[in-house]
Length: 260
Image 1 (tube, rainbow, N blue to C red):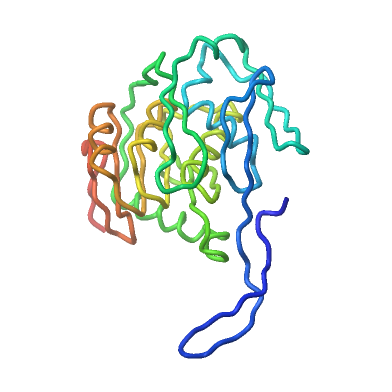
Image 2 (cartoon, rainbow, N blue to C red):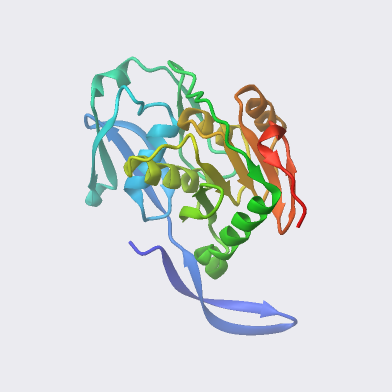
């Protein structure tokens, strides 16, 4: 399935009506299964499905250093992603908190209550000028959003440049895709920063906790619960990052301020 479709629409602007062909994003339902048993489902954009699945497993606390992801096999005719872990049996012992994505369509977010997430030591800092530079690069790279206005964007940066960027109809999915990309490449997440276009809710922060990410920068705002979770779990939240402006909501020590 293509990422988008062109549809004939009526466009009304400044009291003028016109018939045009407009680009709209496609969506699909992806079913996740372990040992051929349903785990969850996601409403998502139809691309980077392996990255999405890998990221979802990491940010749910299902895939860990002790229980690695072995393989993914997509059954296209049924829209099922078959997952093989080093030990598939552990899924029977896991107790999950099941949440619905806030404001992002259908699906189920799972959080493994058997573990509390990663807490790696991290001495990394970023300057105000670096934040502005990576967010400017991020905003200019949102090609599908600029074409359709129908997706969220997420990226991973080392503070100097964007390493990977993905877009999806769900902000949770976009974050899972970039985290999945880094995981599948065998690279660490603990020294990386996640960028997002969407609102920072508590579920987003929970995903970072499980993935071991320690900084999130967004164009949008965090919720009260998200800030409290970030404070408790050593995560720096930066919101309303636009042009040279931004707000730091938690663990301020990681943001250094320099003059131009």
